[in-house]
Amino acid sequence: MNQTEFYTKLLALPQGANDVFYKEKRYLLQKQTLLAGKLIKIYAKELGGRDIVSGNYYPTMKGGMLKPCEMSDAKVIDFVLNLLLT
Image 1 (tube, rainbow, N blue to C red):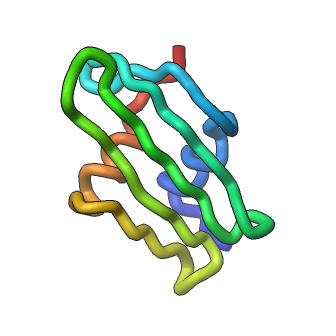
Image 2: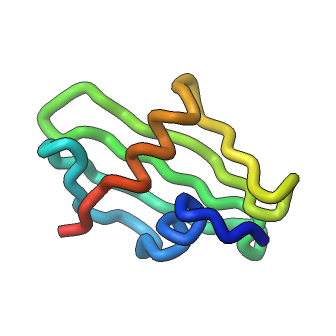
Image 3: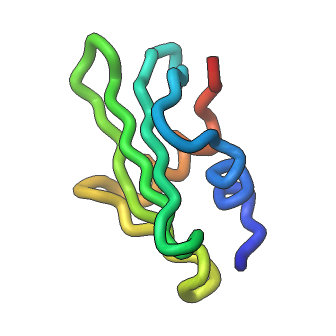
């Protein structure tokens, strides 16, 4: 397992649906951990807006592999590192 700041913060997020703020906008974030911790999925939708953040993270592959869904790695990483749980 890797010990990056991204992975540590991702692990700390509660499972299921969570109300979060990112860049002063409110999002509904859903987190699922699957395959005995080998896959962590996140999907966040801006409430009242059009932005989404989505990706799959494989912590045991190559020291951690992020596979964003139709967006940059940087967007998903920035979201996880800077979101605020309500």
